[in-house]
Length: 113
Length: 116
Image 1 (cartoon, rainbow over the protein chains, first blue to last red):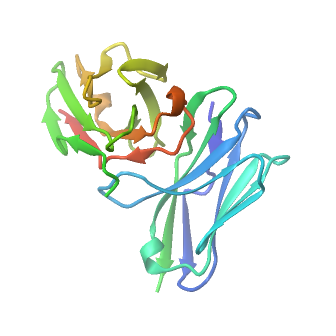
Image 2: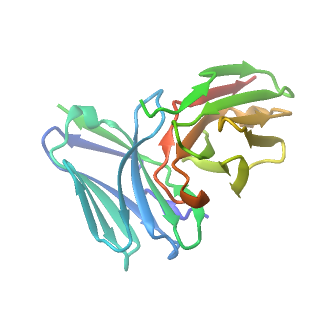
């Protein structure tokens, strides 16, 4: 039972355009969400997070949007750069349940120059 | 560089063998997590330790065990290895506020295990 789903295994975007990566979750107890980026042969790197009390969090070119009613979050990267090409993992956890983070399977983003 | 170190980077072994993977958390972090990433799979949570004690358990096989030592480094022991245990094993650490499981985690570079 996949509690965190990233339905697009891959995404290609032109340099300078917006990249939108999506993530759906099923567990209504989740109240903290994170995005990680992973380059080949490296561990995942924390990118940005959001708690359920917010619907948007921005950090430079990266913005995460949370739609609690739809149990959906998205990561927007604007403008996309070739160095953003990586696998992006969505993760979710529950402060109240104190359960460990659950990760999606990842979306491979390719930014084409 | 996340500050989390893992050794070895690569490990090749045979079925039935036992291996130990080692992780040193970021300086000051009290919580350590272990994850397994198999081909085309996401990160599967195995186990969490907080300040030397087991805090949360995921889909960890009985053949696998872990511990966290007084200096806070952690080891993951995998025994009676099977072909299907071939995977990337990641360690992560976090500050460990009261042993909380939901915190931003910082990952090491991983150990790639190949069981032949």
